[in-house]
Length: 184
Image 1 (cartoon, helix red, strand yellow):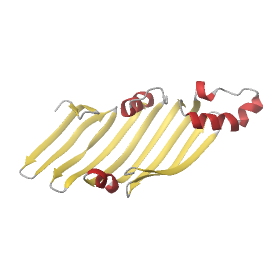
Image 2 (cartoon, rainbow, N blue to C red):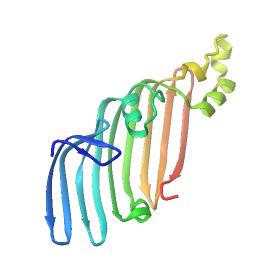
Image 3 (cartoon, rainbow, N blue to C red):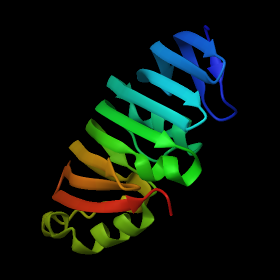
Image 4 (cartoon, rainbow, N blue to C red):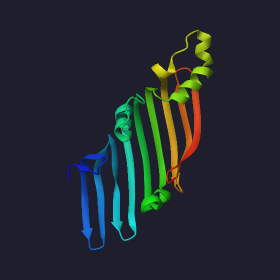
């Protein structure tokens, strides 16, 4: 296959070996890119549902382009990013989401976060460094500039656990952690 479209995302280019047997289909993705992210891995589908393993990777890619491709929304963030991870899962529907395991690490450089209205409003109030300088930027319009941002996450029991998140901004550093209920 040179190209595959699943109704939402396009894998282009795509180089894969497909094996079809009486009760199972398996795919080894040797080379595949979706939204500028390499997605090599394996996929098996049979009577027990889907079993997959993927190693998403990216280096020096555009955050703006990739997030617009993944979310359908543009103008959220600028900069470049690197991504490294491994994700596995098995099952069907919500059981597949609950079975996810693995890790992701994303590091972004030299960008701006736009359209994060709540964060922008909070930062506009607490950005004392800029107030002291007498220069308070309009974070809602101009965005929040950062030198580096990184997120380290793990998947388990239907959750994406953000273990460590750090944004080294132009005027402050922000640290965060939390979880996202993928199945809910």
